[in-house]
Length: 507
Image (cartoon, rainbow, N blue to C red; front, side, top):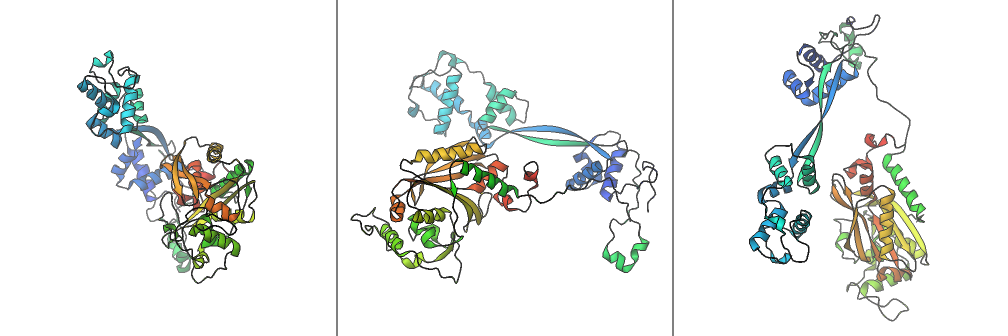
């Protein structure tokens, strides 16, 4: 056993150091100029940067080293900023084009290189704020447009392009808001030995053994080895009892919001048939999403037939025939023969809209507000926002006055309740809703992602089920919504057994 060092209290145990820790502490002790940055220690020790950082952190936990942390900002041009550096800012190009025209012109009369419609609109707004462009439909320069001195944002653009990051804060902020410049903050650590670290003897036996293994015990060779002492002052991981998974706990909180909006929960089976998963929703039987490339179908299983009367009504809607007991068809349908054999095929549920279909078939009388949060399965390519297994929050709202406005209002209320402020919508298409829309929220790293698809159920869906009121329906991508709310950048992280970044302070 190694003898206690001078820094060890009487009767205490000497501090155990690994070979990289001894090497780095010796460098810190011998250096005439401390603190030392991590790159300098990498160069002096010849160790990989990962080993240096890990060993320094362990020295800090053993109270042998201290770190001075400094935050450094790196400013640079984005690809759009580099393009603007070469071609000129949109407002400068617009101003030059108007000077060349030497007369008021309509916006669509100017041809300015590769300037997009959005860039043209931004340029017009900037020139008017600068007082260089007169108000009105025609584009006309003011008297102040005679000067040709560079603008502060142009000077900042050139400075950043030349590697000079000392642009005025307001000019850099203006470029950053326009997506022309970006900044990255990095933390640099400069290390020094602590008062104890300066006195510790680091010439420890290089052949000391750090762990007593079964092999050493079985062979008896442990008697001939020197063992490194155990540092009782080392920080150990903090362990607590069991706790809910952060993602599951977040879903529970999301359910409470839905219940607060007056919705009730519905459930349905994971193993469905094509009838409930697709046919009732007026998805044509030859639709691409029903191929093996998307839907997952179990082998060697046979499902029972769908309810006879409902099967006939769904078949009539698909083929463009009048429903039993009616004179006129709902629509031309899909102009293809409906195959009851396809309706019986088993499949893993690919959307929780199947739960809504089952509910409406058994509860066609309004009003109703229901939701279902459940697992679905699709043969998707796995990436940051897609998985073969995913959770979806299905919902339907059916009352005599229900409209698309109500659906948008629900999406806005849900986003606001979980702290999301950036939300936008655009028209979309789904086989079973018309009109349809998609709602997008902004992820801090992934940008705009779709989380709120929905629309109004088509008559071809509602009338075979016996529903006589308009119904708004949606299938929220709740996993993506959780990514934004919990600060996760990859949907696969939500399904890990442990999410250390999320557990602290939430449960």
